[in-house]
Length: 259
Image 1 (cartoon, rainbow, N blue to C red):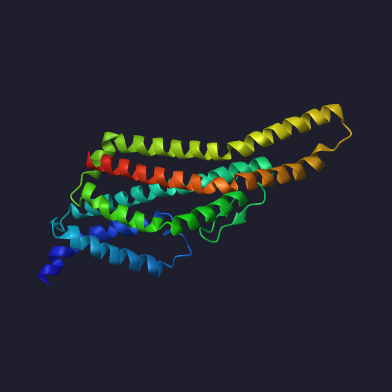
Image 2 (cartoon, rainbow, N blue to C red):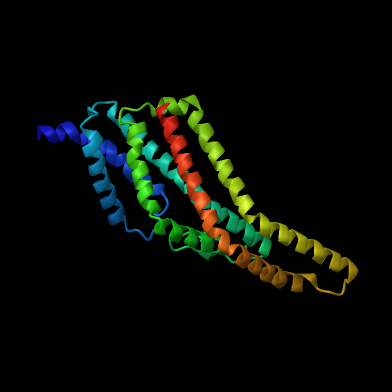
């Protein structure tokens, strides 16, 4: 009983960080993963991490313990949010493509998240998740989460790091980089649709008898699908670049945690 009262606070802090990571992290946060599996996986990972770091950091369940729980929850959410931002790149680029192709009104319900998502974004998101699972990316995510205790131990100063402004600047810069990358991915189709709109506008001026609104939408959809087929083979390299940037961002985040 004395051992339980001595080490249970440290285990609870480890469990708070890992369970909060599972709430927002890609793959693990989807609705297709049952809650029982998420809780069980969080518990077993917490047990493994606790056996490595829990005996080194002595945690006392005093008035400061509540603040420690808040810090661990925030740490897990920040790590998971950084990973999640890179998975939203394909959703954002898909939404931009759908808007240009005229498919923005044909959103569907994603069974993984339960949200209304663009068709192209959902297609690329499924491909991204399949590639991520194929290269065992979820194993690397769990490994990165376990390594975070080497950079941000249980007796951390997360509030001081947040107050310093470095972490906020990093998150804002990462969000801007992911949005810029989404624009770059959708750029070929956006430029093609712009040129098509320009051609239809010139056709309207030259031959007003043509109903541009009748022929324009089917042409934009067909050309958009043709461009998508052309750029589809390059998605493998594109996804690899996204994963490389995601893990580089995690490394930069851990360096900020250590400062």
